[in-house]
Amino acid sequence: MTKDMKDPIPMPNTILIIDDDEINRMVLANIFSDSYRIIEASDGEEGIRLLLENFLDVCAVLLDVMMPVMDGMAFLERLRGLGWNGGIPVFLITAEDDTSVLSRAYALGVMDTIAKPVIPYMVRKRVDSVIELFKARKRLRLRVKDQQKQINAQARQIIDLNLGMIEALSTAVEFRSAESGSHVRRIHDITKRLLLDTELGVGLSPESIDIIATAAIMHDVGKIAIPDAILNKPGKLTPEEFEIMKTHTIKGAEFLEKIPQMRNHAAFHCAYEIARHHHERYDGRGYPDGLKGEQIPVWVQAVSLADVYDALVNDRVYKKAYSFDEAARMIEAGECGSFGPRLMAAFRAEEPRLRELYRKEDEDGKGNL
Amino acid sequence: MRMEKAIYDRLTDAGIDVDGALSRVMGNEGLFLRILAKLKKDENFQGLKKAFLEGDREAAFGCAHTLKGICGNVSADRLFELFSEQVRLMRADRWSEAEELMSEIDPLYERLLSALPEQL
Image 1 (cartoon, one colour):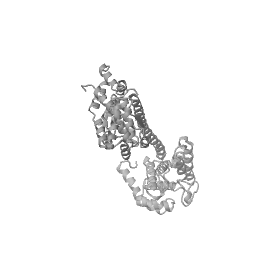
Image 2 (cartoon, helix red, strand yellow; image 1 turned 90 degrees about the vertical axis):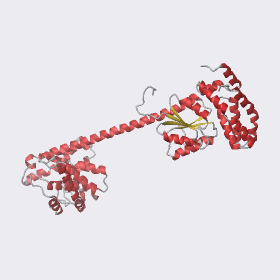
Image 3 (cartoon, helix red, strand yellow; image 1 turned 120 degrees about the vertical axis):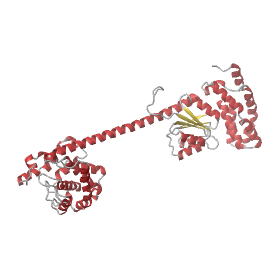
Image 4 (cartoon, chains in turn orange, cyan; image 1 turned 30 degrees about the vertical axis):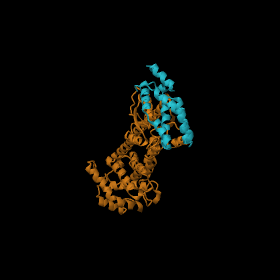
């Protein structure tokens, strides 16, 4: 980097010289004073104090070994104790030729040793190179951090967009049966609450639960293939009509399978299972496959229950809304399907909190249309 | 700017490699003269002699070590060698040999001091 090119990120630019000999400090300061701010200490203790005071500005330490009060080795040990791990490069400026001193200094983390009396252009070159290396590393680290932030934001956007598309599709389908977008939102929320708050979700990570809740939104996409006359018939369906209605499970699963982007989506497996099996019953009398008991994944059962509960407490083309108490009683009495004991226990515990979801919705002014 | 020739010659006669010393301060002649002024006022040499007289080894070692550094910085090459040797002998616990070096060091150091410009 050339001198006139301003660093976009402020970089430390102070060299700390620790030497008890004033002449040594003068010689060293003279070598660096044209491009760096210089601070000087005459022993290790003063050096520690100055380093702590100027911690963010110091880009290198030039350290003498033999000093009164606190010598160079004690300084390094103290620095270690303060958590230093070489993040600021330390150069040992020494007349020592005692190799045991030098090896101990390297073991304590010094970057390099420079012999006294110093040869200026050599000291300058070696120290400059290391400082530049550390600056480049810091720049790179900050840039990576910055890019990571951007990538995270973009990933978040993509996830939000995905969820938005899934909701839009599912709402469009629900809309045909005159249901509002809040139905899919509530299926999502109820499923999530059941799995997150009760032991049903044991073994599932929060991420998996999010995926299942997202997949739950698409449980009824197969209804896109059901004719309006059947879908919106106010009265009871004939056996023939009901057979057609039942195909929304298989059609939904097939439909999801045909969208390549969906097949690669993290939620695909869950969405497929939920679309196909959300009308199975614990007693085996459901459709389309007549799965029984634990053959039905518990989280698919949770979606079925969420669907039933939400249908009961809201108006439908074929019925008026029931009260929460009545809805809970009907589910408990097995009047609206068949659910396993584990799910029922979780539902009983969670049901009072599910009511909160609806109250919150009313307060937000996003009640049913 | 080149150093005044008379001073240059006197320092050279007194055992200073003036060009080497100037290169150590990157040609900063003012700094070199300030360093010579520090050398003139430095008391480590008296301290060293006194420490030998009193048999204070710790003080002697400290003074010899500092003098080695100063002589190195001003490129008083022969004195730098002698003080380096003295420090080495002290470390090796060869104190009588270290003290014997004073007979060679003393006249050289006095000559160095006397060669320093008056006005420093």
